[in-house]
Length: 201
Image (cartoon, rainbow, N blue to C red; front, side):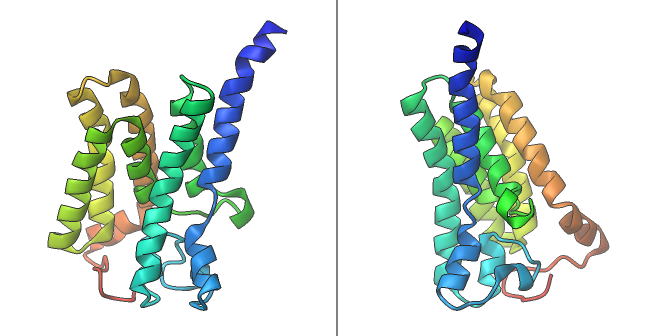
């Protein structure tokens, strides 16, 4: 009985995190505002970069913000309800975003959601993330590069800021980001990766 009680909070953290993370804001917003089915546009990805390909910058910004907030809110909510289980909520939210069951497990690449998670777990990590992500996005205008570099920075930043208990979590999430960017990596190596402002890729 005691063992069952011990696992209740972690299980709830994972499930609640997953369900919050799995809310496909990009799909919802594009349908709600008549921009079509996001999964049939551009790369088919449900994140803000692909929303931008619809030509609706406001929807793209809203998608980015909401994807970020759902990661942060999952962490904050579970830490408030069940202190000590924030990392599990973070993992659940990230997996939910990348692999939502109601979209056939075809979700986003996790870049915005990972920043929200970083913000909630230790905000200085999110500051480094934002500087790298936005800085590279502004200079290179290649969303995939900016997102991957920012993701890789999270376990490094966690170690630098003496949050070693978060290093493994962020390393795992960063590896998933890289995995989700597999096709982008292939295009980068081939020199065919698209830049922001184009509708291909």
